[in-house]
Image (cartoon, rainbow, N blue to C red):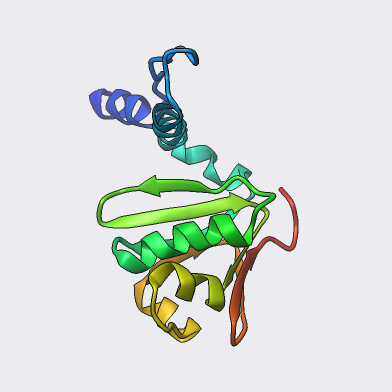
Length: 140
C-alpha cells in the first residue's frame, strides 16, 4: 500500500512557483519555462508532438541548440538540460543543416559525426548528406 502511494506521488505533476512576468527578465522566464516542461507528467509524454535530438552534453550540443534556432526560425525550440544529456525539441518538425552547425562550431563538421553524440531522438528521422530532419508523419 505504501509503495503504491509513493509511486502515485512520484508520477503526479508537481506545481511550480510562478514568477511574476514583470519581475522576471528574459533569462529567468526561459528557466521557468524549462522547469515547467521538466515538471510535466512523464506519463503524458506520448500525447505531445515534440521531435528532436537528445545529445550528450558538450560543444556539439551547444552548437546544435543554436543551429536549431537559426534553421527553424518560425518554431519555438525547447531545451532541457539534464547535465549528462540535453534534450532539444520543437513541435512537429525540426531541421538541422550542416552549414549552420559548422558556423556555430567554428570548424568543419560532417553530418555523420552527429551520431557520435546523439544518444536518442524523438520522432522520425530523415538523414541527408547536408541536413537532418526530425518529424512526425502523423500529428497526435
